[in-house]
Length: 232
Image 1 (cartoon, helix red, strand yellow):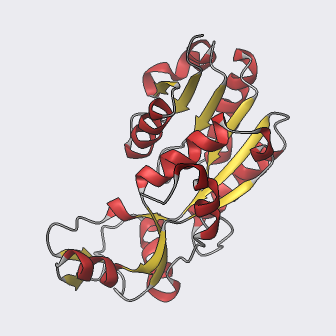
Image 2: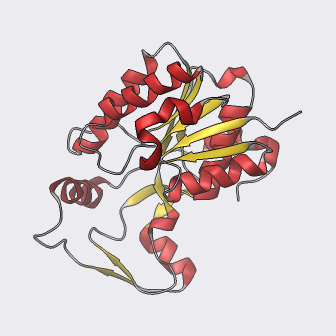
């Protein structure tokens, strides 16, 4: 019996690479798809049993991007999809989060068998081998997510039981602050206000993080990965 093929739209970035690695570990054939395949996305997806949709960071029209990817899924006969959203998608102060909230609505109305994942801030966003330079306060609290845990969660919801269909899962591996991560790694943190050339969307995100952090719960991920033992 051949391995199930799973398309990963946006499969060449760090998120897609982690998802593809976890799918292969689960015994599936991962099919990473990027800009080169966009003109014939449906053709590239044919023969896949599921697809995971990851939009580019700060995409100016994520709902339209996701709608086009979903249309390609329908044309290819792929009816099982996962959408890569974000923790706390409805945050008016962060426009790119609102774009993901609107895209979630597109997914829910797609008629396909969907699961939405809402990841917290990646641990791997911070280079913990040297002093961490941070554009917001170091004691802001977050729900952090390890990329390996994200990949394992995607593999579970796309290859696991049908009970995942119609679910929305907020994902975090641990709760804490960047100061906590740096302390554990034995490095310092230096807070530097963002400069004037920082794009508007990124500046809005930094301002929100500085005031509120971005909390996310850890219990959902623990439940999802229970079959695999502890989180990585």
